[in-house]
Image (cartoon, rainbow, N blue to C red; front, side, top):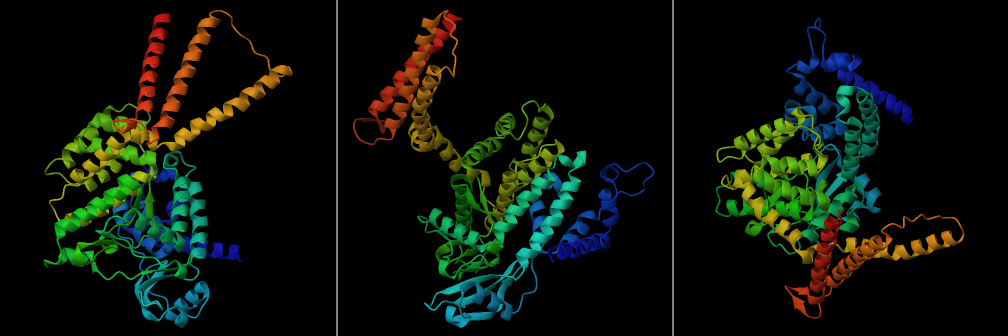
Length: 538
């Protein structure tokens, strides 16, 4: 049955491709598509209607292709700026399914009668998309809620399309010209992201995490999720009774302090991005509400961007360098992050970056959004593929900048980023925070020392049994042993001082234990002695 469905879907996709003039394109060789012969009068890739045709084709092919197109709209470095811009128009709005179907899904997922589960449940949907739709309801305890229900069979349809997509990606990846884009890798990332999106349990987790992240901030509200009414296909959350951001932007009412709202949105997003590394991946105006007293509420938290600590810190450094228009620093940071190969001749890249910063970071230039868009295109021109994190972060930043700019055109995005990035850099520069925040590293060294003794005992046992032989060069042995002993002492002092740094009792100096500071000073002196001896002996 599965094979039959796969073949049928394959025929449907082939038919749609043919309708948009892409059938012959797929049958031709890759090189003839990119480098048409002199006798060839027509090249599809040069057709000015191609971006729009691709967008219409993806729209017709349904959910999986629409979601893929939306993902590719963030990657102009891969699909080109025109196609990326066209893919931004992709909409996953679909006609709503019937109330009877919604009722059946809810009762199956929540194991009960819908009239018992909810005091009220609206038969009309509030919003609908290709994956699911939302209904307003009231819990038996009186809370007004929004219930998101996934459409029947959507996960199975997506899995079928993914099999076909991955097959095509593998075929296209066999060409030398396309191999650099790593199409199978893109499909793997898409597979991962869309399966996260269609499992509503992940959105529940996202809401809980963001609620914790903003627990001490009364200016930001995250809707309450009702776990007992949630499954992988049903999500029940607080019904946010506020004003849509689009209406706030258009309003002239004094009820809304637009500059204040803009600042709260910008500051809260920069916190998500640069401090938490856990940020709303789709923060357009439709997903932001304004409550009483200009409180900002984020909704639709199904897709979240996650940055690991190392990338987040590297990003802070990069944004600071971009804000300073430090071209050399930006290139060096890209090399450090592994984006640019250190063997690459970067003279042309530096020239183009210098021009980009001059044009778009001047007082009359564009904004941070323009900088990232142009940066992605510039990297494509130089054959550099940026990690997915850059595209995700850049897309979200552009949405936030668009909302903030509509609220208050005088807001300076870089001015908002700078204090947060500076605070993060100062935090990393503090010895106390380096020690206290790196307990994992301390545990690593502790475990390494613990494992040293069993390893030593095992080695001695092997020597005694003749399983291991050791050769010593006796020349200068005394000098080698003395230096090795000094290095061991320095290492022991460093580790012990680091462990003592976590103690908050006893004599303190500069908010740090005196004994730990003394240990660091002694370590520094001994280290200098080792270095001097090394150069003297040479």
